[in-house]
Image 1 (tube, rainbow, N blue to C red):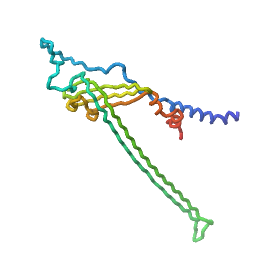
Image 2 (cartoon, rainbow, N blue to C red):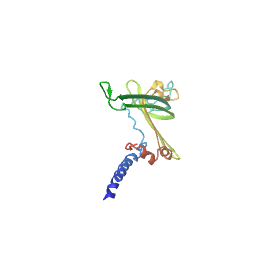
Image 3 (tube, rainbow, N blue to C red):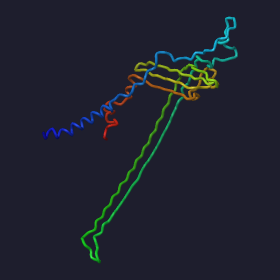
Length: 226
């Protein structure tokens, strides 16, 4: 009976650690891969003009115009030139000291007791934190014009999948751009896209090698008491 009572705290501690491990060892959510189907392209419901000949004004190109995208279904190449850099530094320090003396009781000039009592306490804290983050994404992706807004903005979206030896990489982009920002080579910088949503992710051996091991996730779990 005494042995069972002694083992009870140990069993409770092991149970708590097991529950913490269950919460800490959950693998990170797998990012969804790209769809096999191409992104939907808005269809132009306006009827085509009928001129009675083989030539159609809706699909013909003018000799004085360039090949820049400006219609639904056109493609445009986006040059990814994204760089971010952030740094933050914080410092905190404080200290506190206190002292108190209790003298021996005195009555009519006569002291009772032998010695006075003195109390003192002091504490201090100093903390420093520094955080630096840098990110860069370069490359190119060709997107499709999904919609032409009344003010002339082009809503574009697209994705690119790279299948490498040790995994796959995905690049997705969507946003709004001006036709005037597209150069003569039908290219535009990603810095010219409004409300840009750029996603870069990877799956495979290289991506898994960047994930911490199960023991590291266990000690960094939210339920660890230390």
